[in-house]
Length: 114
Length: 117
Image (cartoon, rainbow over all chains, first blue to last red; front, top):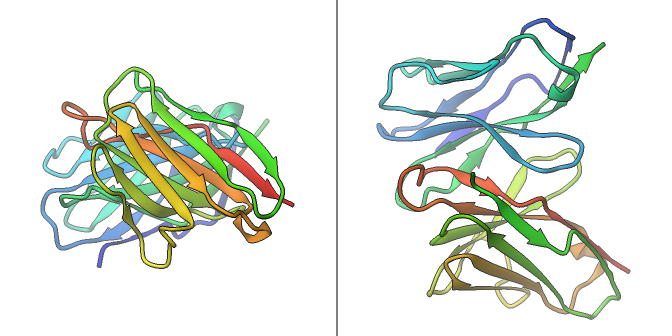
């Protein structure tokens, strides 16, 4: 069965610094997608970044980038120049197969401190 | 963009009444929508997958007669909580899977807070 593990329940970082959130997953599929979603206090779930497993190049979106290690089944998120608005719950998620359901990690609560 | 709206944003109802929640994809067509439930400080729990023009697929343990789902068009899915009870109080979130192109990405509505008294 596919699983997603986020081993850091809580993290904090100083404003303007860099933080990395870890995510590992387990799958026997070869074609799949990985996502990082952000859920701020408003509880709106926002897509941060997505990675297609067949692409070797790590995805980047402005201050957000991933380190995708397919063999190790690792998918970490790096946030550079952290801002107060980055304070949120971050969820790692995986999808594959015909139904494309998302398998979720338990989340990492990130606090950006001024 | 990929905007998903959800209505209402919050609702308070009496025990025994039914509540309907709407989920709309505003700027794209969604053949598949998903309904989730989220408890405080927890991850999302998938309740059902809603496919346009066909019956929804429910996850194990979710009562389909309790949580009625209708996906009548490519931009609208509804979740009706029938005969709501206090234990149904929760945060309900829908998502829409974008067809074609970025078809593997789910975009989420802002959620509905349901409180059953």
